[in-house]
Image (cartoon, rainbow, N blue to C red):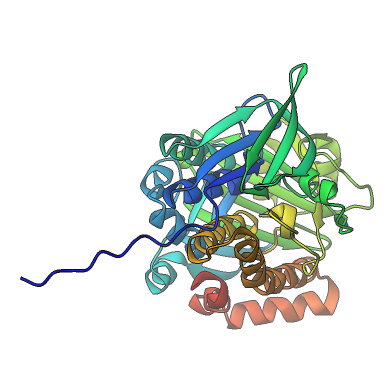
Length: 395
């Protein structure tokens, strides 16, 4: 019998990590790092791990990673696997294009899902904590300090200052990242002159398991089921000069209904069922700005916030999490591992940011350009519409 020589495990670039931010990107990163054998402390400013945002779409590039992390089955219980994407004329309701998801899911080996953010966050939080990640809530980042052996985050926790040290620190704290600010990186979020109004609509009478994208002049609406099909997520995006900086500011329902006056009556009746709207301004960040220095790096919106016109914000944060865990296991030193992660991710996220910006222009066309767009949609619908983004979904 042949003797297999003992091969010691390659040392990790980091044995411990502090993650600032307990949203989807931070929790996905916590889970990925724990599965790589790295001790993790998550620091979250909110007093409860509760995501109050709208729904989101998970494409195969994200669900493939969630499957590898062992949480896809848990997530699918709260999600909906839509059967099709329908692009519709916002005023007439006419379907311009229909793309079936099942063939695309088979092609790229993972499903398309739609899910409420809170359900995804709950699943990731449970999995990360079961894997051994520690989570501290109600803490406020005060400073980031280099130490002889790594880095530490000093946070306000009640009336005390508490220091959390680790080999690396990861800022997963959103578009207005406190970590980015403490690093002094000059990459402020850029307002896109668009505001999103969102609502969750209870639907006892049911709704087709489909994603509906309604296009119009300077506005569009996205509707799809969430909560296992028990509710609808509706997001209406309009051109607006007034910047909204909060994630969940109260939305003026009267303004929303006035903005969509004259649109398809079925859509307007659906919007009328919303009890209230919350709103947030749409921002992105210079895609080629710095992500980190020393033993600190950024992840998700903190690194590359992008407009939602490709539904890739959460997916790219999940990709970041997997890429960062991979870099920390392949490399043997922390700083080279973080720089390798940043180099591997920057070009791809910049390309997706650019594509999302272009979609934002195309969605809101009017006049002859709108007519040309609709003609293209009618002629190139079906599988070809999703195939166009195979460079995103197939990775």
